[in-house]
Length: 368
Ligand SMILES: [Zn+2]
Ligand SMILES: [Zn+2]
Image 1 (cartoon, rainbow, N blue to C red):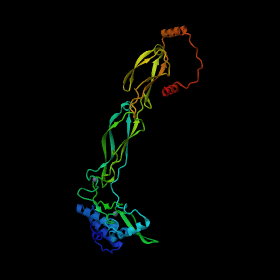
Image 2 (tube, rainbow, N blue to C red; image 1 turned 90 degrees about the vertical axis):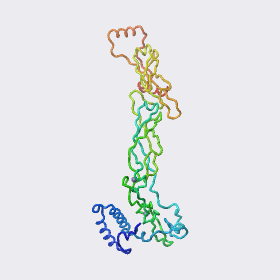
Image 3 (cartoon, rainbow, N blue to C red; image 1 turned 135 degrees about the vertical axis):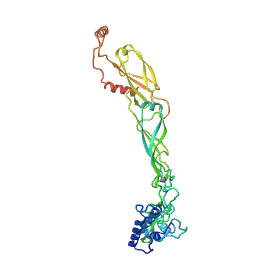
Image 4 (tube, protein in one colour; image 1 turned 135 degrees about the horizontal axis):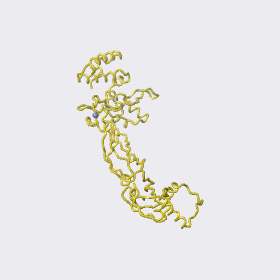
């Protein structure tokens, strides 16, 4: 990489003011707004970088020092200040070094709404996910095609900046992440234009998912490595599908069982009948015995929800609600009166306290 002093055309002992003047002069000449030549644009970047380094006293000092032993490209052995520092203070010298631009991406969350009938057997869904994906222009290198990262000339590739600090033991070197390359050890002189040097772009894609039977609201299904692509094309995080089961007008759910209410006309309840119910997965024929009471529960085995774990299905539980006729014509009224006369009917009387019909239905459902 070109020498920063040469790039700016100043002496090595130039003052801060001289450096600033040199930069202004070159910037007026090379700035992309005034000079459309692509070479000028590249030169402008170089000049700006050189100015960034040399106008910061710390960075300039570091640059003037050149590569330090023990860090990035230095020789092995007990020669550098870094080694001495680590000997006394036990710093993890070996593990320190440039950090990778490439990092694992974050997890992503997508909400999926399902109907109850999809829950019974599971469903195959095409789900649109909007996450970061690998940039196809640079394949995650972050560099414009045909270019590559350059070793950071402030930290000389180590990602660390050393500073001499006075202490009881004399001068020791401490290190902190390099501000120029943010600890990566390299800079990207020509960022990829597609991803602005991020190595990833946002995109929507559609994935096919088999949602297993038996899921319930709030459940999160983990799909490994389907989440966000990380910085610099790092490995994908996981994708989580959060399930929401839509309310159903007829059926509700209690664990693996399905609950429903069946209204039975008084005459049917008295005489008994059979009925064909349309359930979520086909028709079921049930028998309503003569004399069935409100709040009785009929259990239809294995017509509930497929168990998420362990297989098999829960039951369908039908709570009976006997409907008293409200509109009788004259003839019907007489028939009922006849019936009342012929039966030794029991007058209304207080019974054991019981909660309302619906509470009772609920209790029965849970205890059957
Ligand atoms: Zn790119
Ligand atoms: Zn650096």
